[in-house]
Length: 240
Image (cartoon, rainbow, N blue to C red; front, top):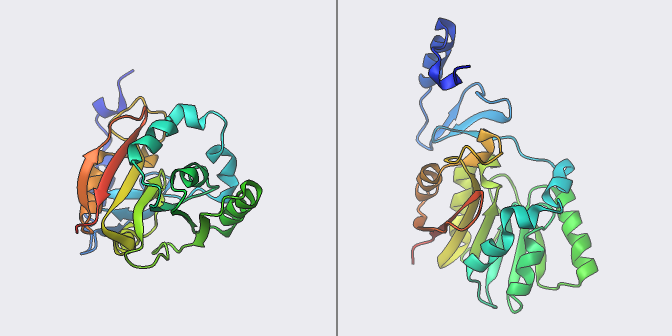
């Protein structure tokens, strides 16, 4: 059987594709047009269709037993090179999978667990009470802002969350303001360049796409830390 990319689409499909390309992004990079992928919304940013947000009903997937080994979260945390006094924002914290792994690494600092779903924050509060980790602070964000004070954060960690942001431009502008001068963003997303990564395409990002979007809000690309088996670990920073 021929691969879909090798076949010629029927005339009506070609017409639909041409109509899709007729949409032009506005000055913010956004477009509104019918979803190409049903797992996404009818909003596009710099040509990328935004994925649906995974609700709190998917909490079990975030805490799946093999996640740490599958994603090599140990390598990710080592690569962040955190200082004991750092203030870290876990943006899109979900159940706090990373929040509570970051906490011991910044014993004199803080971990700000930001999520837009109160149900996720209640799960984090429950774990915080059980573990007695006093440097964890749950924060209710919005779709446009993490609700963090200006110039207050050393690192913002985004793990498999950014591609679901309804308002990525506004959110990352707010993140930039929240970073201290020289503060970093660690963006972790499944690699779109690798067809072997068993994740739906809409839940992946390419390095080029990520750079285009984050550099557009004034963040500087620092490096691609190529250590993880399935994901990009891309480091950006706020200019000093």
